[in-house]
Image 1 (cartoon, rainbow, N blue to C red):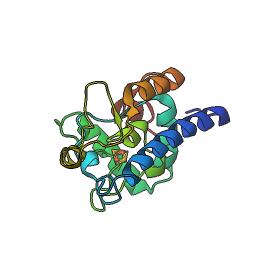
Image 2: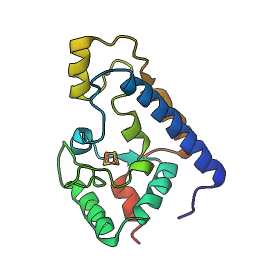
Image 3: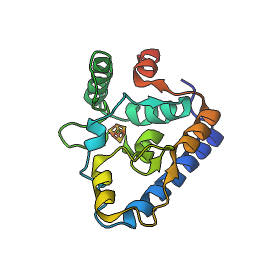
Length: 172
Ligand code: SF4
């Protein structure tokens, strides 16, 4: 697999940085915001298996390659299992015992936007956040535009493919 060029890496990391900044400003500005270390609910209840674009895959691959062989093997097994299971899906990158993400610093866009970026007419997807909003209202939350950031990444790095497709294309 070709590594990211310096320009591609800088562009992808800039998109991620901007998304992370928006997410932080929302969570830090609201008491009791549920997204925090220790909550892995969304990683265990994916509506669909993760899909990632080529740059995201290449970036993820770096973190995957840095894992211990046993963890890499477990992830490959979990990805293969996704094909035969039904929703909700548990992310193959989740360490099911600790509840931590094994590729956190290199996690894809979908994980960074979840709960902070919304699509037109669609809520935040997370029922913990929904409950908080129903109790306290939205206040001054400036949601990110999910459709726009997804379109930006797709324009830069191509259409997303499933983890199953990416791992099948990179068996070694
Ligand atoms: S990549 Fe990490 S943060 Fe994203 S769903 Fe999987 S375990 Fe969760």
